[in-house]
Image (tube, helix red, strand yellow):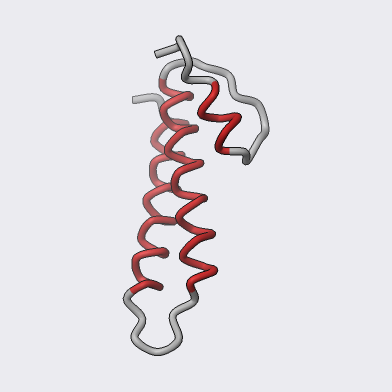
Length: 74
């Protein structure tokens, strides 16, 4: 695995863990944080897949744009 891919995966898994941890809070869970970290997790996993397949994706946080790179590429 490409080292940059591994970095993206580690970051995605950290965001996922944060979202899950916040959802399990019994008193006043911060659902905005759950949504934010869930979006970040998906973004970073998409970037990991693109990175591993040698697909340049530039600097974007837009999930639709990132997903569009998959069409016909994998």
